[in-house]
Length: 209
Image 1 (cartoon, rainbow, N blue to C red):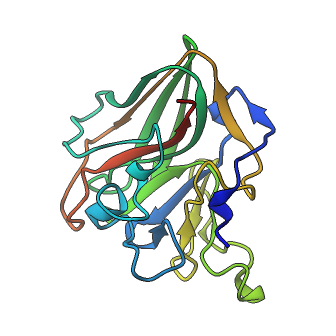
Image 2 (cartoon, helix red, strand yellow; image 1 turned 30 degrees about the vertical axis):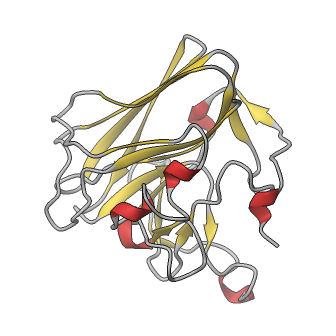
Image 3 (cartoon, rainbow, N blue to C red; image 1 turned 90 degrees about the vertical axis):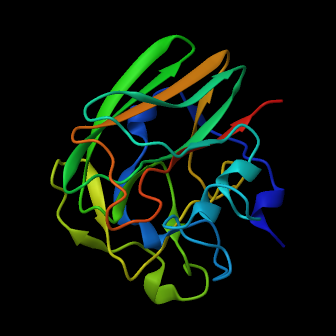
């Protein structure tokens, strides 16, 4: 039975800065345990597949380059809902990512540090891909110490699964009542070098429609 058949119950928070920040290889960010569902180095992670982000009502993706140190809109939505994850584009090299999330007219800004041009930043909760099958990988392993004190570096041996906002294993989601605007910028801009889908980014949320 799929965990995604059950709606999330809470608790909710109102500050996206409380969400985890993870730096991971694009090839290790997945939506499913099934090997048939592509990872975030493929366009079908974002759109066009059974497990893609855009199958979740309210979620959004983008596939154009990020201009250096310039905010780009990833999601603009009027109405209520629950924010689950933000998936960044890839930078040209180790770089600083800045996220600005405006909930019901209140803006929250925070940063994360990313690695190479084959890596992404994920904001929000995930879990090891095979956590309930193999007890030895129930938890994440960090590949390195946090470079900014906030962003965890995920070990590539344990894929990072985006569970989706309707999965009851997520500790909490970010709630909004009237509107949400998600913007992001990369200090040096995004890069497709080394990662075919490097410019792609997205927001995973549940719209109350």
